[in-house]
Picture 1 (cartoon, rainbow, N blue to C red):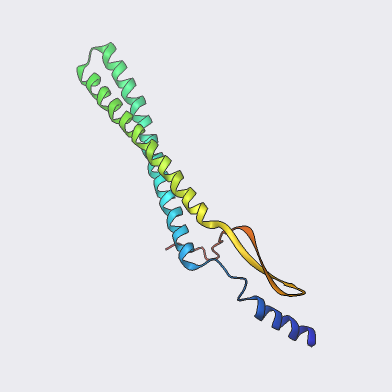
Picture 2: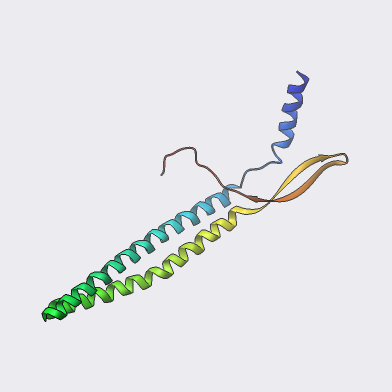
Length: 141
Protein backbone atom coordinates (compact mmCIF):
# COMPACT_ATOMS: atom_id res chain seq x y z
CA UNK A 1 0.00 0.00 0.00
CA UNK A 2 2.85 2.37 0.84
CA UNK A 3 4.47 1.67 -2.51
CA UNK A 4 1.25 2.51 -4.33
CA UNK A 5 0.88 5.81 -2.45
CA UNK A 6 4.55 6.62 -3.08
CA UNK A 7 4.15 5.96 -6.84
CA UNK A 8 0.98 8.06 -6.97
CA UNK A 9 2.69 10.95 -5.17
CA UNK A 10 5.75 10.63 -7.42
CA UNK A 11 3.65 10.82 -10.61
CA UNK A 12 1.70 13.80 -9.28
CA UNK A 13 4.96 15.64 -8.61
CA UNK A 14 6.63 14.68 -11.90
CA UNK A 15 3.63 15.10 -14.24
CA UNK A 16 3.67 18.94 -14.30
CA UNK A 17 7.41 18.87 -15.01
CA UNK A 18 7.12 16.55 -18.02
CA UNK A 19 5.06 18.63 -20.45
CA UNK A 20 3.77 17.88 -23.90
CA UNK A 21 4.47 20.17 -26.81
CA UNK A 22 2.49 23.38 -26.45
CA UNK A 23 -0.63 23.69 -28.57
CA UNK A 24 0.42 26.80 -30.53
CA UNK A 25 3.57 25.14 -31.92
CA UNK A 26 1.63 21.99 -32.73
CA UNK A 27 -0.93 23.95 -34.76
CA UNK A 28 1.81 25.92 -36.52
CA UNK A 29 3.73 22.73 -37.36
CA UNK A 30 0.59 21.12 -38.76
CA UNK A 31 -0.10 24.24 -40.83
CA UNK A 32 3.45 24.24 -42.24
CA UNK A 33 3.22 20.54 -43.12
CA UNK A 34 -0.20 20.98 -44.75
CA UNK A 35 1.06 23.97 -46.74
CA UNK A 36 4.17 22.05 -47.79
CA UNK A 37 2.10 19.07 -48.93
CA UNK A 38 -0.23 21.30 -50.98
CA UNK A 39 2.72 23.08 -52.62
CA UNK A 40 4.40 19.77 -53.35
CA UNK A 41 1.26 18.39 -55.01
CA UNK A 42 0.83 21.56 -57.05
CA UNK A 43 4.47 21.54 -58.14
CA UNK A 44 4.39 17.88 -59.14
CA UNK A 45 1.14 18.32 -61.09
CA UNK A 46 2.55 21.34 -62.92
CA UNK A 47 5.81 19.48 -63.60
CA UNK A 48 4.03 16.40 -64.97
CA UNK A 49 1.58 18.42 -67.07
CA UNK A 50 4.39 20.61 -68.36
CA UNK A 51 6.61 17.71 -69.34
CA UNK A 52 3.67 15.96 -70.99
CA UNK A 53 2.83 19.10 -72.95
CA UNK A 54 6.46 19.47 -74.05
CA UNK A 55 6.54 15.89 -75.30
CA UNK A 56 3.18 16.12 -77.10
CA UNK A 57 4.07 19.54 -78.52
CA UNK A 58 7.40 18.25 -79.81
CA UNK A 59 5.75 15.24 -81.47
CA UNK A 60 2.99 17.43 -82.94
CA UNK A 61 5.53 19.95 -84.22
CA UNK A 62 7.69 17.22 -85.74
CA UNK A 63 4.81 15.47 -87.53
CA UNK A 64 3.37 18.79 -88.71
CA UNK A 65 6.76 19.88 -90.01
CA UNK A 66 7.26 16.68 -92.00
CA UNK A 67 3.67 16.71 -93.37
CA UNK A 68 3.70 20.45 -94.10
CA UNK A 69 0.67 21.13 -91.86
CA UNK A 70 0.76 24.68 -90.52
CA UNK A 71 -1.96 23.95 -87.93
CA UNK A 72 0.00 21.06 -86.40
CA UNK A 73 3.21 23.11 -86.38
CA UNK A 74 1.45 26.04 -84.65
CA UNK A 75 -0.32 23.78 -82.14
CA UNK A 76 2.91 21.94 -81.40
CA UNK A 77 4.78 25.20 -80.82
CA UNK A 78 2.05 26.50 -78.48
CA UNK A 79 1.97 23.23 -76.51
CA UNK A 80 5.77 23.16 -76.27
CA UNK A 81 5.90 26.76 -75.05
CA UNK A 82 3.10 26.30 -72.50
CA UNK A 83 4.65 23.07 -71.24
CA UNK A 84 8.06 24.69 -70.89
CA UNK A 85 6.60 27.57 -68.89
CA UNK A 86 4.66 25.17 -66.65
CA UNK A 87 7.78 23.09 -66.06
CA UNK A 88 9.88 26.14 -65.20
CA UNK A 89 7.21 27.54 -62.84
CA UNK A 90 6.97 24.21 -61.00
CA UNK A 91 10.63 24.34 -59.90
CA UNK A 92 10.27 27.34 -57.50
CA UNK A 93 7.05 25.84 -56.14
CA UNK A 94 8.83 22.57 -55.29
CA UNK A 95 11.73 24.49 -53.72
CA UNK A 96 9.27 26.53 -51.63
CA UNK A 97 7.56 23.32 -50.53
CA UNK A 98 10.85 21.93 -49.24
CA UNK A 99 11.59 25.21 -47.46
CA UNK A 100 8.22 25.23 -45.68
CA UNK A 101 8.70 21.58 -44.66
CA UNK A 102 12.09 22.49 -43.16
CA UNK A 103 10.45 25.31 -41.17
CA UNK A 104 7.98 22.82 -39.73
CA UNK A 105 10.78 20.38 -38.92
CA UNK A 106 12.79 23.10 -37.15
CA UNK A 107 9.81 23.88 -34.93
CA UNK A 108 9.56 20.24 -33.90
CA UNK A 109 13.24 20.05 -32.91
CA UNK A 110 14.72 21.81 -29.93
CA UNK A 111 15.67 21.20 -26.35
CA UNK A 112 13.62 20.10 -23.42
CA UNK A 113 14.28 20.13 -19.73
CA UNK A 114 14.11 17.15 -17.44
CA UNK A 115 14.27 17.32 -13.70
CA UNK A 116 16.08 14.65 -11.81
CA UNK A 117 16.38 14.04 -8.10
CA UNK A 118 19.86 14.74 -6.74
CA UNK A 119 21.09 14.55 -3.17
CA UNK A 120 20.89 18.36 -3.00
CA UNK A 121 17.33 18.50 -4.42
CA UNK A 122 15.90 18.72 -7.92
CA UNK A 123 18.31 19.39 -10.78
CA UNK A 124 17.20 20.55 -14.21
CA UNK A 125 19.11 19.46 -17.32
CA UNK A 126 18.51 20.26 -20.98
CA UNK A 127 18.72 17.60 -23.66
CA UNK A 128 17.99 17.62 -27.40
CA UNK A 129 14.58 16.40 -28.41
CA UNK A 130 12.71 15.70 -31.63
CA UNK A 131 8.97 16.10 -31.12
CA UNK A 132 6.36 14.44 -33.26
CA UNK A 133 2.74 13.50 -32.81
CA UNK A 134 0.78 10.49 -33.91
CA UNK A 135 -2.93 11.13 -34.48
CA UNK A 136 -4.94 8.28 -33.02
CA UNK A 137 -8.24 9.25 -34.62
CA UNK A 138 -8.29 8.51 -38.32
CA UNK A 139 -10.90 11.15 -39.14
CA UNK A 140 -9.58 13.98 -41.27
CA UNK A 141 -11.60 17.22 -41.16
